[in-house]
Image (cartoon, rainbow over all chains, first blue to last red; front, side):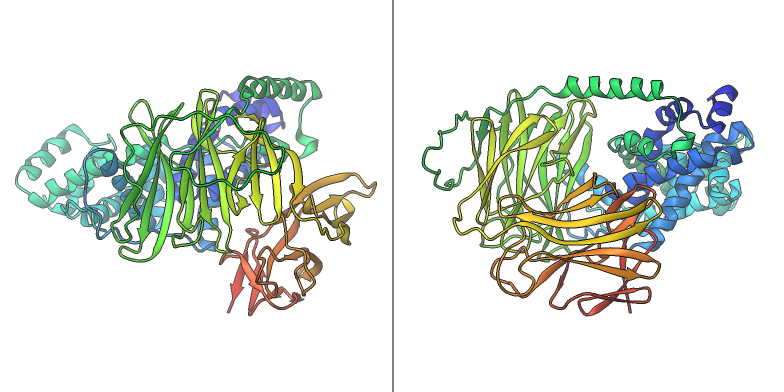
Length: 174
Length: 439
């Protein structure tokens, strides 16, 4: 969004807010759904996130920081919600055998979901922000309020954890 | 170079942030280090699987978000009118179906049609060769049922046994899209299987014009099944559950499969039968209702209470009739209906809690509305509790689910301080609109 649109947004211009929704609703929805693994919760969080964005745009000092600011609000909302509720978790797929084609793909997707559920949410956020949302380490750092080095360390731990779960086993036992 | 430093550089390379000189040093290290090569391979594997997350999406929340904006910050009515008209145009564009056919791949005997009911037209739907298996095998991990064609690709119902070898089943619907992507569309949560009707999930086809809808029935744990119907939404490009009413009810209690009428389907639940007209690909409209029971108990206003809110004094009424079921109405000071919540078809009987009952409780600084109703014929001494708290932001009553799921009680409810006393547990109303158990 350009500076003019942001200025109008700060003035409560609904048209400017709709434009912001056009730009960010889909990626934020995807991010929150990936982070929580829960459609209903993610829908609630999308609403809460953009309501906060609308109510607090005057607090945004640096126009260039709009994207990480929105992701930061979304992340904070998700982390708070995840702390407060007991989460559904998939149990280990210890007996699943890899099968070709359709079933294999399903198993892999479920394996990743299960693996993400076992990782700390802030680590999962690092992975999603960089590998799905395409952010650089300094951008993800701005979202999470940590240093770029800390982002890279968390990513390293995530890869290590997932590597250990893969374990070179055809069954994807986790 | 130590492996720890190499891992950091591998992450930098992964993020596209590595310096050329570091990249050369890293390459030399990796060529002689198996562990770091494994790490690099794991990055590729993670990327390959994370690519599936890029396809995740939710229905747009834009309308709900805009509806919640503070009025003082909203813009001119002309803009809202324009966006409203655009929304209407979009809705009109997708409203094009009229229900014509109902087909079942493995038909069970339908209930006897009432006298005078016109036989419904039917047409077989060819199942593709990808029809997999219909036998559930606990402990076998993934089990697929019929794969059915939809406008958006091939949908398949999958079960997952949890834990492996255990007796708990989770079910979900996946969609193989024409471009080959596989997306998880609908999660049916935990389902069960056994000997009684609908204790084994069943999937059938509903043919609507040229579109195949997927009908599902699973066990609700109370002797009835829950019917869901999914349609592929060409606008959102997603397989979505079709709501049965304006409140968004997507799971309907049924005791047998629906039959077909000229305009839609007729569902049966206990003594009740309801006709549904499919007005679009995305909504059922209640067409007519009747009962097969002649001895009808009385209906009308069952209970009433008032809520003091920042918006004024609101009235909450629990209303119901035999043919309509029970519903909760929220009215403003002028008596205008602000919100209506369908409570389904509670059982009416003479024993305690077999009629829906309403309580207003002060829990902490909030007033909550609690509804007790008995949906289970044959277990009249237990009731299901539903608690609604007034959400000033949305200006609506909002269901506050119990963290452990649906709660059955045998005792009346009460409140104490910040806690709701229900069943044998004390519950705290959390900020996230959830009732959490307090030890």
